Image 1 (cartoon, rainbow, N blue to C red):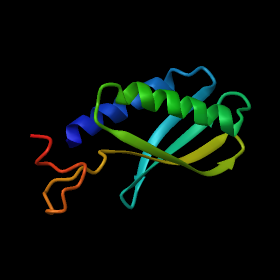
Image 2 (cartoon, rainbow, N blue to C red; image 1 turned 60 degrees about the vertical axis):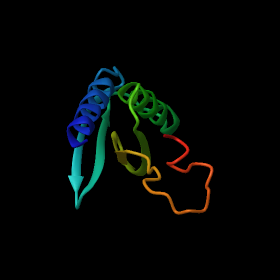
Image 3 (cartoon, helix red, strand yellow; image 1 turned 90 degrees about the vertical axis):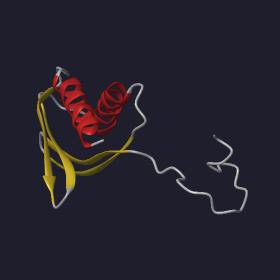
Image 4 (tube, rainbow, N blue to C red; image 1 turned 45 degrees about the vertical axis):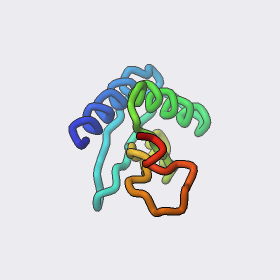
Length: 108
């Protein structure tokens, strides 16, 4: 799945780069945690930037079994930093014998 996540990241960064209100965007992985460094062209509100991130992430994840989490870290003038991660949701992989509603035996 790492190759699939790489494609999702590429699509996401391409969608973000196409936004005219952004000057640049780059992904940096620091101690295993991916961060977005976003530089704006014009004054952006936190809500508008969050909306751009949400829209680009949804486009990149379309028809894929992946979700994301994006957390605001800091803002310094035109530079915004977010902790952003795409990940595969956890699924039950075994039967525990408790007859759970999401039991893998019922799905086969």
